[in-house]
Image (cartoon, rainbow, N blue to C red; front, side, top):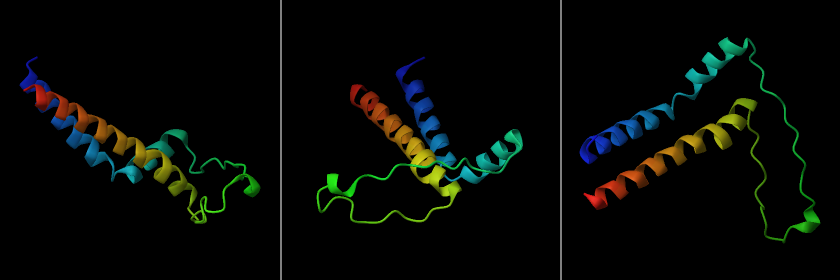
Length: 98
């Protein structure tokens, strides 16, 4: 495989991954069909002791998100975004060598 064909493959992969960012609902529907359930597992997180935090730390309250969005926003979207960033960095590294 030549460097040029590798760059084309990476560009194609990056475009493919970027297109998947907006398809969360499609993957959720497929997962519901496979698991035969439509419930998200409730997870209880411990709240931090306020006395341990500085006065200006995290003043904004948590948004009220649905269970679906609690998975999508901190889980699905950042993974897709990080993969896109990593592919872009790799493309720039190949472009510098070219």
